Image (cartoon, rainbow, N blue to C red):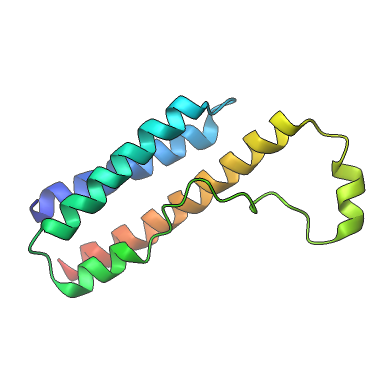
Length: 117
């Protein structure tokens, strides 16, 4: 993987996270396909000859799409209000928040990497 491919791959992942964030429903299949792409990307970066600094920046990106604490209220009394929402709705909102976080992390990392290269 060269520098140009790295930038294109990060752009692709950023666009995909933005697209999924704007979807009404994020299916398990879409989530699994993106996980496969992320794993492929991480493997290519590990096998590349990039500097330790670039590899460190990429390792700091939180690619965990299964994390479930993005849409939880801070205060327990808010659980009562949110308790009336369906589980599917909560799951979709959590996924959207997770993709928003991933998008922001990719954006910051892309900026750092471009400034190094």
